Length: 118
Image (tube, rainbow, N blue to C red; front, side, top):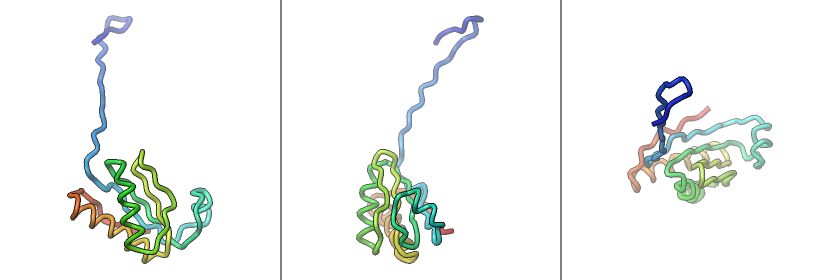
């Protein structure tokens, strides 16, 4: 604890992030505009799937599950933020995201969200 120049008490707060086992976003963009593919630097394969997960290393597991469950390509994987982007046709992306959420829930006791689509 410290004090400001005017004598007011200064309280310090230390915040720490402790991620749980969870999937926080599982979303299919069914018909993205071409600019999104260009900005992401990935091939236009029809649809984009987005996942955010914690702990962050789960992104590796999710990408493995997704690519084994359906004909999708990994567009982006970041084990430091828990982000995964996949691309493929709409049905394949939907199937891949559902496989990821179901497997993480059933096998690893993750809290998951419903797969959404726009």
